[in-house]
Amino acid sequence: MRCPFCNSQESKVIDSRTAQKNNAIRRRRECIDCGHRFTTYEYVVEYPLQIIKNDGRREEYDRSKLFDSIKIACNKRPVSPEKLESLVIDIEKEIEEASGGEVRSSQIGELVMRKLKELDEVAYIRFASVYKKFKDLDEFKDHIEKFGGAC
Image (cartoon, rainbow, N blue to C red; front, top):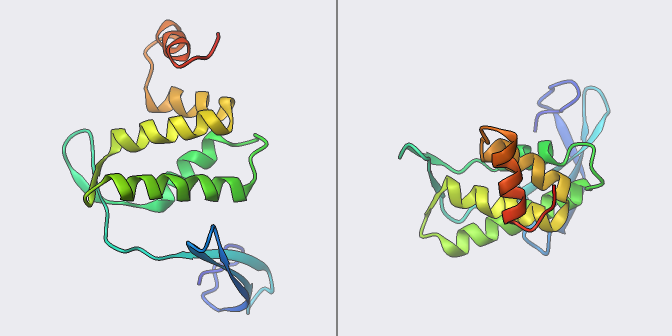
């Protein structure tokens, strides 16, 4: 496992435990070279999920893309890393239950917006503004009002 501090490939596991309602394994690691400690999570992937992009292309699901987009929306918000992780796991469960191995990227985007609205309205607005690609402020206001917010 690559150390996020010095990029060394050498680390040792200090502690392992189940996480996220037994859907993941949380491992505390220590870098052999620099001594920094960091946390990793392991997940079981039962089958590769294919994402159908808006232009019709298909690509394999990449968890880090989902996590990073939610993390950006939640930047400087009172949302803990554990909440982010839990949100991603909830979204993944819904996707896996609803899909037959393929899911449209638009479905994922709508699901993320719904979950973020429940978690943090500012993060929801940030995500929606990027995801929906609003042309102007009026279009943005219309979307907020449609989904129960106020401008």
